[in-house]
Length: 192
Image (tube, rainbow, N blue to C red; front, side, top):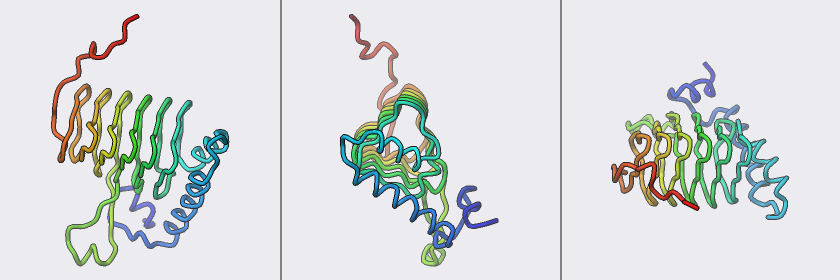
């Protein structure tokens, strides 16, 4: 297997592999163009995000600045919104469903390192995919750790560090994030 194949499979790999270095450089150049773009140039911004992400649905928006490792391992559904200063370390797949709202400073970390200091010092790393269901709201400065799955319609409180899977229809918060309450589907319904 190549180092890239190992990376995508969640196995130990060397991030300094020339193919991976070249792919990260390509992503960083696109991300820089996106982050440096003029606010009124929405068509350019959308075009650049489509080049960065592996898949982007309709009606998505990303507020700069935005940062990622590869971009090609990010897949987002329709009507997804990323607010300012989000970071996605996408050494493995990061998948977001439809209508996901991501507040400022949210960070998604698929990348992790061996606990053994010798292996870590030799620059071995690996990753675990992150999956976010549809209709999820992730509060500001939350951190989504490697391997986490967040169920549909969940709400992640601001500042949370999500280290374990989150069920659908719940609110979690804290460090580490813990169950706060079940969401009643009638909560906050706007009636006219």
